[in-house]
Image (cartoon, rainbow, N blue to C red; front, top):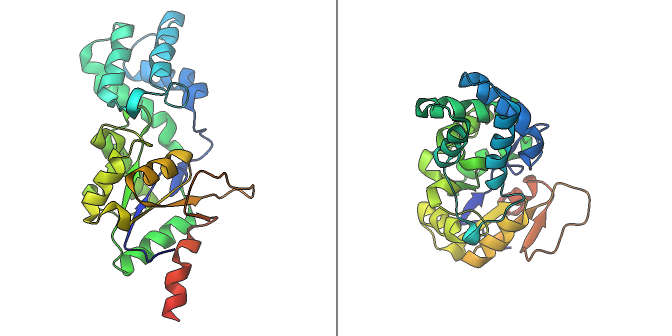
Length: 242
């Protein structure tokens, strides 16, 4: 593996996670919509629940692939939701806040993530995050989660799919990531835990590292390297220093 010139990380299930929340949020739709209805002072009738689930399902990228991986903002998605409910436009901000609050209650950062970020920062290795956000999650909520997790990165080094307009594996986000880190893609190493991280990184010309925390055999997605912990990312650096 070549020297770490610049590093890009995926966020969800790579650096941190919402504990006890599955990758596919559809099973949580009824509870989340109940929270939204309460915040918007709307009665959650059976009909409104059904309409809300329909809207969310249309934007569920775990079950409905999008052409060219185009991204939508939370404002676009939840404006459609409140319109389907007949709720007034001024409830949009409360709707968005309430929906995501349902999922953000149990944030957990992986200990090796904190060690890796701090170590890379100390070594002056340019480091940034490229993350697909669920349902157009606003960037201020992503930054708040990072602050809660103790991960300190400047706002311009946290790139979301709504910033780019595309989701992984579209290579556009990886190119933006490289630009923000002021390196070419072939000098960027990207670490993630899903197929889209590897496929998108490869398409952009990055070196890809699959973080596979499971004891099972990692899938052959075309990654340049597999690691079981982010501690392994730092081993070549540590070895050279001794």
